[in-house]
Amino acid sequence: MEDGLIPGPRMQISLSMLSQTGGHGDEWLPSGNHLLLLATHPGVPDTIVDGPDAMRAKVRQLVRMGADVIKVATSGGVLSPRDKPTHAHFRPAELDVLVEEATAAGIWVMAHAQATDGIKNAVRAGIRSIEHGIYLDEEAIDLMLQRGTWLVPTLIAPQGVIDAVEAGAQVAPEMVDKARAVVEVHRESFRRAVEAGVRIAMGTDSGVTPHGQNLRELPLMAAAGMSPRDVLSAATRSAAELLGVADERGTLEPGKLADFVVIDGDPFDLASLPEQIESVYLGGVRISSR
Image 1 (cartoon, helix red, strand yellow):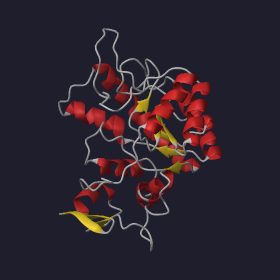
Image 2 (cartoon, helix red, strand yellow):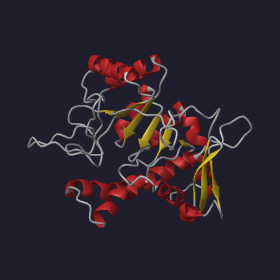
Image 3 (spheres, helix red, strand yellow):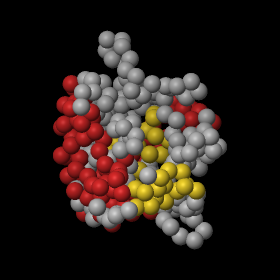
Image 4 (spheres, one colour):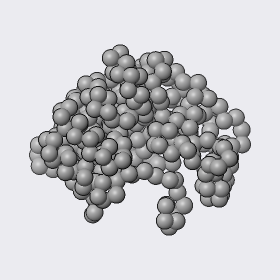
């Protein structure tokens, strides 16, 4: 998009997610088969890494290859074969090196973190945001408040897995069971984080759910405790703050880039928001219209 080859959203990319052997990004099965959910691509390094020294080298490699941010899995997840969302991954020494190297390169680290201890380890290491945050406890929330850590809840992610299966998608039964097990605890964790005042930015884990359905996240956030106004702020102003671009994006102000959508209707009617979008502007240029 930055080169103008295609019209699309402005992006910060991580290239690939760091995972320990047997972790959320490692898709090898005991049978020797290899899943292809997170398959590597030509020019993108293998990001299965173990130990502080290997972690340091891998972060430097990602930076060399153009990563804008570093993504790491500090816990297991739903769509991975050999772990659970309650498992914490990587040891503190590995995460400390990760953040040290990313900071030296002037970029941030974002963590896929679902397990309680995986969340806490990420926050203590200085990771900027927690993606998912399914099993938050009071200590984890307090740590996030103390450190100013962001939460990107992605409530649609486990629900999207369930919806896909009900529509006929082929997903391993064990993964479906994990998705069903986390939906309600995820929403409750998010509700408590909102009540405590944790900084929230909207995100969707798109790719797990189809691209183009991102706005399904908004009514889920409202149903779990955020006001519609705060939900829209999380998707605009707060998201820009998290990504470090609030000086030029995220709000309509003189001197900022004119990236915005035109709505025909009530913007606080979050469930019908996709149908209300009249047009999309990027840098003041209309790139899509109904």
